[in-house]
Image (cartoon, rainbow, N blue to C red; front, side, top):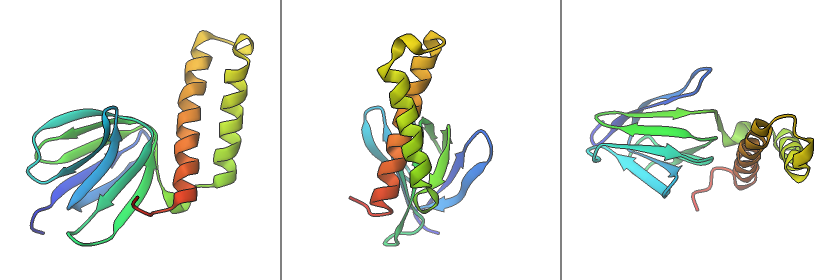
Amino acid sequence: MANTIDLEVITPSKTFYKGPVNIVICNTAAGEEGFMANHAWACKILVPGKLWIREQAGGDFRCAVISGGFVDVKDTIHLFADSAEWVEDIDLERAEAAKERAEAVLKNPDGAATPDALNKAEIHLARAKARIKGAKDGAVRK
């Protein structure tokens, strides 16, 4: 395909996505950024949020939710995410329960078993919020 770049989305458990894309849009620490063929080389930290993939110019976007990681853009795009799932596969009830658990830990910091537990709760809360937003919004590009 013309004007495409190979994308590989890798999680600790699997290769989530692999193939040529026209554009990929993700949430970096600096805000939402898009990457296309011939983009300047870049390495960016990712924050929890939506991952938009358009496989061909003018085509529809596919939408997933990732929970942080980093993206490395060179002659190909390698996106390393802690987790990734298509928005249509998100279990909303499970995500809301995870959000409630994380909020409970953060509301009672003295009850946390270790100092690391608060950091983990913040990470889990951010992931749960991204999953909930993804499930409720669906694959609509706003």
